[in-house]
Image (cartoon, rainbow, N blue to C red; front, side, top):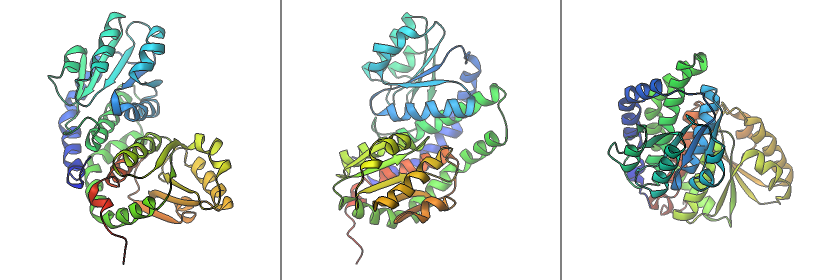
Length: 339
């Protein structure tokens, strides 16, 4: 279980990952031959949602097809389809998980190139791979800092690949600039939104359960946050991707049911959430949202909205992840309801 103090360390760790890792990342990115085949990203343990985020990032920014897989699915289904020189990126915060080492071993035995994303240069995974991207997070394997720093590193790598593959443009330049200022947005949000988050915790704890829904890069955020809230915050939530929610649970919701949408005004599939919000209103279900003030259509249909700075889909999803992680901390849960 994490404390608020540990999560408040994320801006510093994020700066170190982005500042100190930039030169190291670029050197490895230039050495690797990308584009030979779909990139496979394996998230070990609690890093599977991070792998899903990575797949979105590489396809969106670098224009490379990418697959997110758990170690078990990779071994059972994926590895036999891959050609030699395909790249598999193995994510493990500690770099010591046996399943991560097995992926690297299996990849090498088939001529597949294993790369690692981990925090320790001398970890077994780093030694087993042909190259390693280092994060500067600290703490447990499944910590909020580990997840945020991993996604930040993947964003930085995808941007470098975009430059290398000559996909530069206004979107790329804007996102590069945003990454430099991202820790400041975290610091502001942690300070200014704390009271609102504590009120939200009390609201969610009163529910028998709710749907936590996100599209695009907010999808893995919703999946991870639902697990963390249940495991450590004693709040029952089910994380789901927006189109899955629209075609599955949404038609069966009843008056008083609760859904929380995690989104942003620059989300590429925000229309899915806007359409779902309309149907929620018709059914009399309750909508809570975590988004930015420019997402007026979603905010106006929400019973309660927590507003974060208007950021790109990448930056906004990382910030949303940190704020949702705060909901599961003891300090957020132990704040009493407003007088």
